[in-house]
Image (cartoon, rainbow, N blue to C red; front, side, top):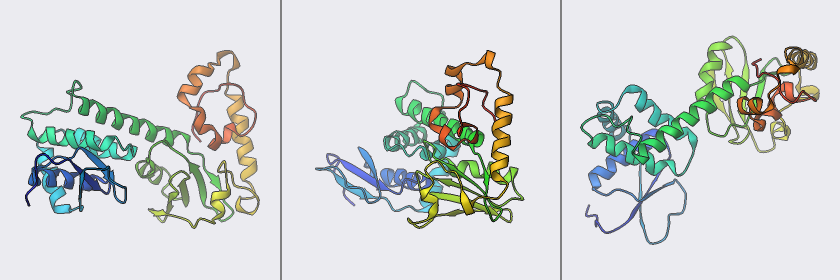
Length: 274
């Protein structure tokens, strides 16, 4: 295929790690490097040509093996994890990071003077912080059928990253963690977690703060929530309140899904995990 060097190209891909690696493979084969990326189904900018990347495991595998010879295992994991940020501006930075790593004689993963390395690394760290927060702030409620339910709304798409934690911790239980913003969840039963979605009319979408009520909730759940709030108040030392630090450790945007924040609480209490 003849590709003009003067033409500007946009690559459209499925925003997966294998898709990005395939895009890198295509770029080297075509000898054409995109000026931007778009997701599948998005409208490309005017006056540029579009190459639609078809995710290919074999191509992706070849690039990945080469990348592992250039970067540490942790750095490669970081590149893949950064995609959970869903930031559209990440795509080009990530693509250029991978290309530079493949061309370099030594690892570039700590070269933070490079704008692409810095952006991708910073994004990866933000994703990991959000993952940690979800591990800390998930609050389960027991439903009438014995399933434990939690609703979350993270800044990044970190639910797949937190599922292994809860599968390990609550391996014997049936539970559902649902991402309200992205409208999907993971249901765990019989030591296995599967991704699930619900119809638009599902009652789940009528829970603005994720709180179960009426026939949906186990008969004893209200009492357990009251006990939890009582405990939370009891461990709060008012003389040591530090609202600024509290909001830093437990940002306000998460409060609507926290059991201990459903009633009037002191301005700041130490964050904890249920």
